[in-house]
Image (cartoon, rainbow, N blue to C red):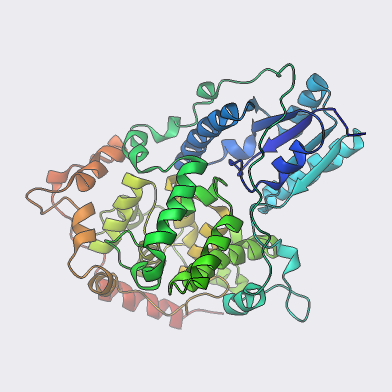
Length: 472
């Protein structure tokens, strides 16, 4: 006989109904399903933009669950305590969730699973956030991959399970447990006035993510290999925002990319490689969790990076370095909550090399500002740019932002879109920057565009000298 006791579905970064193994297991267990999200200390620690975006995602997913005849229960506090209380209130016999892979989440989840099992509760975790569980991809010697290309070669022909359909029905309990009010959590409080500026740029929820994927496959993927680097064009999938909260799954994106490759669309292979780049980031975060908090190449601990909020670092954060492409990319971040991937590489290189400032400064700032913040991808991207990470760009390579501008924004459409100073009639996107940033910065478009905080040739020379004189 099927177990008819309730199942608690602990939701985290998996805010979708389709291709959700934990949800499917809960729905087939035989009893009612109680979806819950817990605002614990790891949620509390999120930066302003990712926490705000999570709040929007929760509100949207709560409605999706309601449309499916279910409900989202909200609780605040330590995860194990909240789950035990729900078990006691509902008589639930099992708890299931989608795995996370950063070390703090892993430690929490292991402790929760062990404690619940000791209580006699069936506690199970499922895949769904990644295509390949990190411990299943090994070199021939049995170790982790430290370079992307061999990792890609190892997984590119692997079978990826086809996406699961959304359940036709989510069994509901006769009586629902009490729930917090999402508004009381004030998840957007730290965004202040910036939320109103960023909100029009958000593509919220599972249906929007699927539409985004469909439009990308139909209209953009063929030229993706070339257009993804053109700063003024909308040539990327834009799916990082939705992947970050699990509003779409990597499986769904992978199989869409495979179909496009089968149809002969030339950019499909590049898209698949980008999905695997995300997998590689989690592979490294799982096997070498130090990548999230310190130099992956530990000999870089001796490098004399600046670790203070100097005036130059403040100018970088404010998008007022005097280097057009750096400033345009930083301003795009404040207006949209995201940044073009080419821009991310350029601003990271500028901070860590021209300004010789520690990549952790930039990593933490992105943690605060990105609505598509992802712990593994953010950490690996910053260390790749800085030269301290695996598979890194050669540490002595210093991007020239002006050369990058001439190559990837030759008519300066991207620069003009985001920098108001010097334009007689700047576009609204450029003006929105001044309404999104903190008032305490005291910025206005009539201030005039600043002189460079450091000349590009001077910054490059200083960086190369520091590399030549390194003691490791």
